[in-house]
Length: 248
Image 1: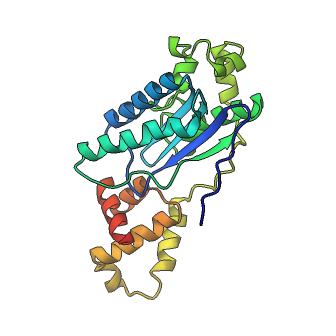
Image 2 (image 1 turned 45 degrees about the vertical axis):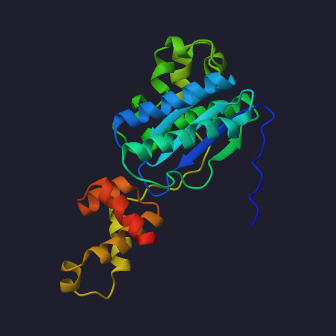
């Protein structure tokens, strides 16, 4: 079946989302910095503008004003290059990202600001303790009015005022209706339902293959790799390995 054509933005503004292929996109802090370096270099080359970003181990959120060659060309300059470097660094092969990136046109100033607000509030939605000041988000640059953000689209929409920016970012975003994050009790209920019929002895003697089935089951229902790792008391790389095994 042919892919659906990407919806074009008359404004040139997009929200973009890149998702991992059941792997950790970023393992070390240097990985986040490497990706940002590639993204900023490609944006400068294309005369594009990265309006907002928030990077997480399994997902990337961006708001981009495309330049000379469009958002698809921009991402083609970044994602394969990052994957190649990642594969060399971690001695692996194959793809890192799930399918092609998703994008959504932003055709008004209000839509742009709400998308930027949404991206900057994703750390809060993911219960990250640093909240809006999460290290791998563009929020801090705007809030502090650093040189890299002066004169940019977002600050123009915020009247060149960091105070106005922070006020707008503090408001709830309706940009994307995200499903509610599962509570620990809801996760346990999912497991109880999945393991129904097994005796206590069976539960105490689950082998790695059985646990791999459970890991895959939870991940398919929206439980993150980080939370699965905590639940099973293993490292994130071990969860990634089991997810890979569960798909083979």
